[in-house]
Image 1 (spheres, rainbow, N blue to C red):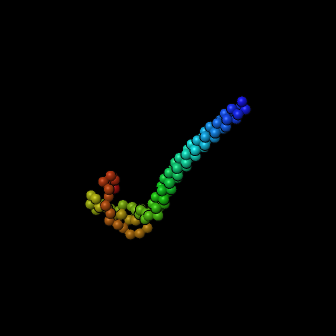
Image 2 (image 1 turned 90 degrees about the vertical axis):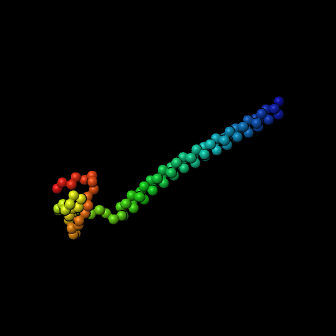
Image 3 (image 1 turned 45 degrees about the vertical axis):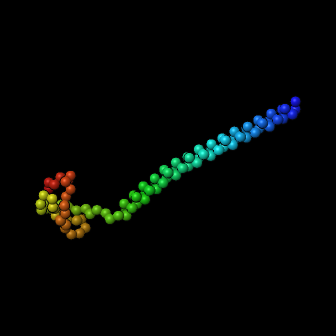
Length: 97
């Protein structure tokens, strides 16, 4: 009787260990998947901030005042920090002075 109980207990311990290993393996894979998702999100944030930084380092736009309309599409513009320029105008912008 004692021998039967011992072998039954040994089988139960083995089943428990197998189940425990399986659970640990599942937890590890879930944790790895979560970490990969976090890595993807952080990579996206990093790339966005790199692009924003590049945009800030690029040459800026010149602000000016329209002095005179030469033709329907050409204008004389005085820059706030320098000379006058003859420039074109986009179609979407209202061209009335």
